[in-house]
Image (cartoon, rainbow, N blue to C red; front, side, top):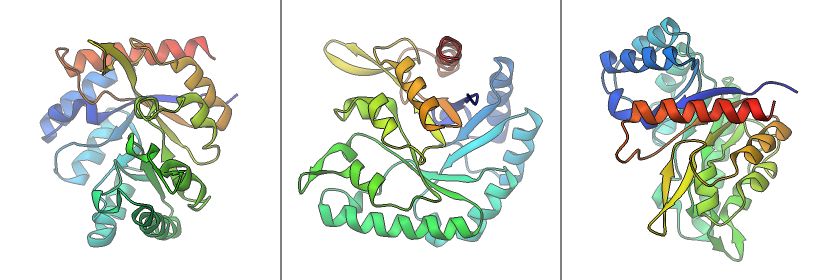
Length: 258
């Protein structure tokens, strides 16, 4: 069975990646813990050439990015050139723009527009990637939005980034839903969930209640290439420490399920 590459979503470390100097310090830390895969999201707006130089310097493969939806329309050529520089073929958005949410018709419009984006990206050798939250598990006309996204979008160059925390929050079983996305996932987000005072909270990977071992096996089953840890809010833990704990947790999960 092909080995899944493990990494870190830089959104967790966004406050420490706003300048080139911070970005380098963060990549150096990740390199020191054995991480060689990152997703770029939420970092500062410094020169793409610098991002490319530093990811190469610290032996980081960029598996995915999250960018503004508007850039597909307003800044397409620069977007493509930036991703060529960092050698990343997966271009994603972190969420569906709010203008499309809240109705069956709005979801239909997003499906059409994002499908058109994926076809354009495919011609240039790239993939469109969609990252879920919980609202995709709302029903309109008795259909789950996430089901529609998976079933009504192209089979080529249109990928999904399943987020284990938000799938659980949305009321589905993450490992089961991951299997429904076979052939449409290159990168998966492992985000753990704990309960504090009866409320769900983000947890370091392996420190919460989600069955991430089952999620890992589901990723193996459907041919996922990358799993990256993500934690939206680290609360009273420094994000560097949270990532170190979470990355060790992810490595342990991978070892148990090799």
